[in-house]
Length: 136
Figure 1 (tube, helix red, strand yellow):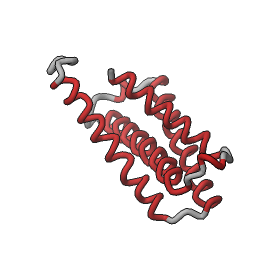
Figure 2: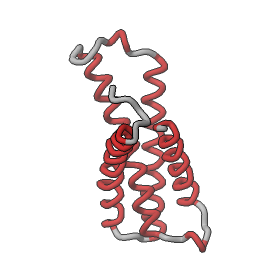
Figure 3: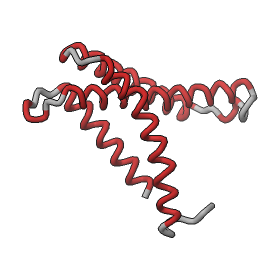
Figure 4: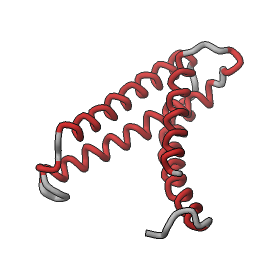
């Protein structure tokens, strides 16, 4: 079930990226798009920052060992750093192009990670309550 939620988020992220560069008059909602593109940037950036922090903890021996870091893990973190940078570029570009108010960017940056966190807590709780996943 959670995999489908992740697929939905990835699809939404791709749609946000495409809509931020497309010029479709019927779908032109600058305030909403500004929040979404800044939210995607913040969420990916926070995830990448968390991964880098985890790697630093492993290198320092605080959490795990440096032996646990491999090329695939470094590539994974690098991919998310690139994705965050890409969405940051889209966010700045979109905001400048449409001259949107900064409050929409702030709402996206603050709101998206909070909403994602709530969803990732609430959905498993709901699935457990409905008896669709075990407690452990």
